[in-house]
Image (cartoon, rainbow, N blue to C red):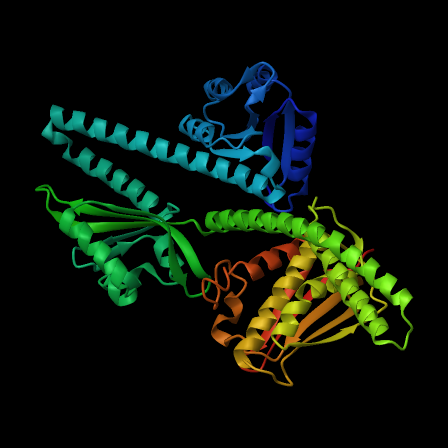
Length: 525
């Protein structure tokens, strides 16, 4: 946890929303927050007079002010305190207008999650601090330049003073260049590195001196980037790109905002290039997880609709088959057919119940549940897929397992993802039938440091995972599947779900031999 406490002023007239935000901030394990609540704009303005707040959470629908007027008043009263705006409507136009007024972030109430709220507040403060630091640096630079210009106009005898001032400026620029969070590289027109800053070198795991004199494309050979660099040199026009994917040796695929600008000499000729990169992987990951969550919700609603449509006719079929069963003797062929109809109808009804359970809207409430129940629902949904691919299933579940505190639909989502991955690996290794084309699932309880856990293991003898990428398979967007087969988010989201439940997930694999996915979840106390 960060040692410094963040003081939050919440201006919100809805007691329920205020209480929910307070609970979200209290849940944070990474940052300590103190919350002061004002129910109106006027009360909030009064609270600002003590000047002890680090960030303001502002609802734009208040009893004594609304819309962007509230933002104007707050920015006028406390221009140096970062503001995060709250609204009940997802209005992109209002969001853009608020950001133009200096608001650091824009949150829709019904979409806020605890981690998102904490991240937004921390980033708002960091961005505001950076802005203020840059403003102070800019003002200082302007002051120094103005002083120096005046001195040169007065007398040439100020050369010594000029030298001292230049030294200060160089030290300041050096400090900014070395410590700014942006990755910066300066190159000549042949794309040889002249200098990089600390952040650039650290991102590549090297020392700054390593890059001097080396060609950019000897280190990072990509034809697409060669064309971009050459176009900037030829046209003199800068190049910008948002969230460009890049391969990282440890983190897998990352995303960066790109800026490539030409440097011109006094005669207007291009003498070099400045490449600036900002890592936005966390933002892209968060946005992609939101899209996936919305997609899963849509699939859930569709599944619920299909389940309800199937449920009524299947009940009728079972009832009519029961009538036939009662009409014929047990030795007759008709009795056997009716009994088989009832059995298959019950199986379909079970699948319908599992679909309804999977589609049920989650309220993120954890409750005591048996792991075997969640696994049973997951297997009911994947039974047809396993049969179609000729994949056998072996279960070894300890019947005396303790219950866990869990959100069943979330854990079921994890199990479905692991079963799907196991099927993919088995089908790659065994396109046809094979005795080893099997998924084995084990579950047992164990104790660690006096705490009791439930462990479930998904084992398959499929294609396995190459050693060089095993540590990256949980990274967002990393996948060995084609675009039509996977997004690279399944294991990342699963890791997040298990972590949210206080558990851990571990992957053991040898390429061409086996894969074990081990999940440990705390047992109910």
